[in-house]
Amino acid sequence: MAKIRVTKKFHFEMAHALYQYDGLCRNIHGHTYNMEVTLLGEIKHEEGHPKDGMVLDFGKLKKLVKDKIVSVFDHSLVVSKTYANKHKSHLSEITDRVIVFDFQPTSENMCVHFAHILQQVLPSSVSLYSIRLYETATSYAEWFAEDNK
Image (cartoon, rainbow, N blue to C red; front, side):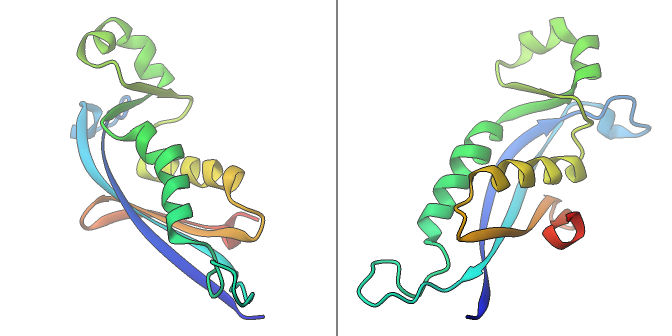
């Protein structure tokens, strides 16, 4: 059977601040994130089956990513635990959608986090091949399964 990669694109708005960063990104600021999720799998060959010819229904992939990532992070402020502890009183005043992590919310770390989320919920018939997370139109972080075995 041939292995095929399928990719779906997503976008969401998210703000973050990088604790003690030595540039402007130490301030709360937002991005329009674009994310490409690529799966690897075999094409279903089952004549008469509604999913015949597919690796995974794009609608199913869309629902998984929207439920587990986009709806959670869209229009949220993401900060590290250290940042949150230092600015606890101010954060609750400016937004009720704050996500706090043990790590610095860089594109690189967010890409790894999103990969971990998706690996937990994908059907066993496919595997996560890669995630490309654009923070700007010209800058992105990329996660590949083969690099993380």
